[in-house]
Length: 133
Image (cartoon, rainbow, N blue to C red; front, side, top):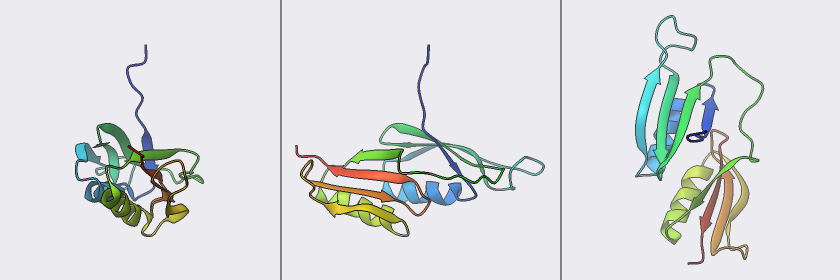
């Protein structure tokens, strides 16, 4: 029987920067593991070979892929974040959209008080929601 399912984020050289940024934006984020490629290992020395970052209790496995590949992240898979208040959603929207792409600007679309959908500068997609109580 499956014990758990963990989202897996594969970067190409930007995993360390992404981890740093997510820890800045999510103050409760907990870095549970951080390993780097060493000499003679398959990835460039110093890049992330395996990391586990927990955001709001959700563990994310993160790596820098040694082989270069022709694909990246897509908005068809995203992280849905229920924000606690107006200040939090505005802070996350500003931080995650900085250098990224806005699919839906922060606004009231009728299904929540405020909502936004952005790809961050690394291409990871985030849906930010301020639920109506």
